Amino acid sequence: MTAVPIRALSLDELRERSSEKWREYPDDVLPLFVAETDFPLAPAVSAALEKAVRIGDTGYVASRTPLAEVFAAFALRRFGWTVDPSRIRTTADVSMGIVEILRRVIAPGDGVVVTAPVYPPFFDLVEEAGGAAERIPLRRVGDGWALDLVAIDRALSAGARAVLLCNPHNPTGTVHSRESLSELAEIAARHGAVVVSDEIHAPLVQPDAGFTPFLAAGDAAARVGFAVTSASKAFNLAGLKCALMVAASEEHAAVLRGLPIEVVWRTGQFGLLAAIAAFSPESDVWLDGLLAALDENRRLLGDLLASRLPAARYRMPDAGYLAWIDLSGLGWGDNPAKRILREGRVALHFGPAFGAEGAGHVRLNFGTSPEIISEAVTRISRLVEE
Image 1: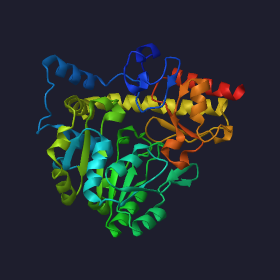
Image 2: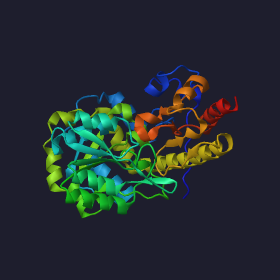
Image 3: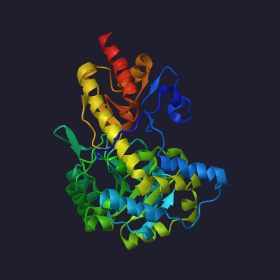
Image 4: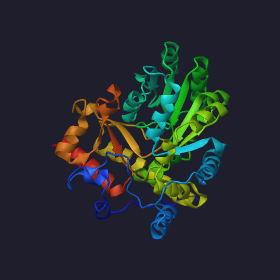
């Protein structure tokens, strides 16, 4: 059955929200910068939260919840990935999970590979965990990107102790192949290194792209890896605070079990209840509708850029709702988003924030309505025409 796209809320409805996306800039700015989406919540999530408010279920997170089992079923259903629920722990968000794991697998000052251009907080998270970020840029392959495994091997051989992987990759929307993930795991195993895989965008991989969870990429990956994920990106739950840390080996499960109980207690009660609802089978239809809407939007954006901004270079992402667009051909400097905000009144994420490789680029959030996407491209194109 073909999924029916869900529709984004209207601009008037969205401006009633009080989150960062809708409060950072004045009302004349179209906000397409931060990774929040503009769709209504999944009905099962709304129902779970409404019930919690109605009965006052606002206390401490319980030590025993069904979330691990519900996520394991989701992973098997959506990715064909078998997860042992006993090897899952929760915390507030993916960033916190990354830091807590890194703190326990590296020594102060150890190098941690990050694959730039990449989610800007990665650099800060490595520093917070006591490590030193070693930037290994993605390799251009045709019109897309891939892990530079030769360079990563060299960095681990020189002493780096971990790889902080973004899978699927933010901001490029790249879905790393099973083969490249398996080879990365073998490289890490040879050097006694650990791979921490941020898989927050995994539920947003388009059906034709396929997705391999890092821990499912082979025996070596199961030995060397951790995964950290959440329902927050796909179901727009970032403010509710719940992420899952997953291990595939007993050794790494012991690392998670050894985390201070305060790490788990940072999980938000509403976040946990919402995640259970999001990962349940009854939310699959909504998620399929979201993927269909994002598929339409990523194609619309490509058509609009081709017709209105032909100098822009855009590869349609295979996952997520974030477009990585090269605007260096417009001659607007290393950070074109500044001019676009100032003169076009469209807020995009600054390309250089993702690393030196982001010079001349912007990141545009197309998790919104076709009308807002069209208006944003129109405003940007006017700057060229003027």
